[in-house]
Image (cartoon, rainbow, N blue to C red; front, side, top):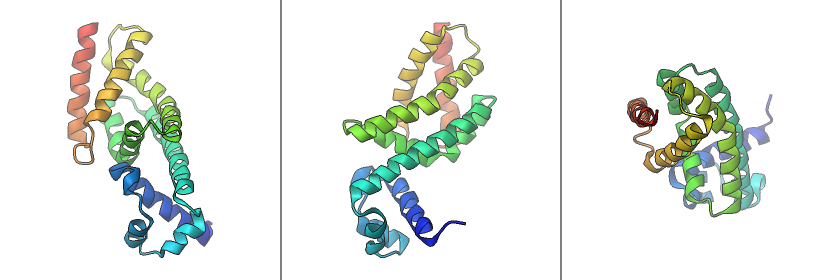
Length: 181
């Protein structure tokens, strides 16, 4: 059973994680988070001392979430509906990753982004290759994946990251990949 201190810390992290995912680090304001959580600002400083420490916790939480996504991804049989359902369920994690991409000039964000992509990327490429049913080499698939990933993160936002949009996105991606076959 978690202690009250651990529970309070986790509440701050989950709220901050969502704010970061939607608004980036510029949205992380102690007063705003405290108001949203109806917790005193002093609780934040008790658990984290300063914003940089809090952000480090958010980055670590993201890597934990990336492992969870990768484990689910490994059990997916097809992109549609299996992977799409996972992506919709982990919408906030994808949006957090998008914010890391936007701000990857910051070293800690870039390192977290790289680790997250390593954790999630391999399983996706394998599933994608199986689902595409094309004869592209692994190197070609990985190259196409890198381009598709950049395009994906340029397009996603809180409103369009849903099953319908993802199904259309992956259908279009499949058509493009099949042109190379």
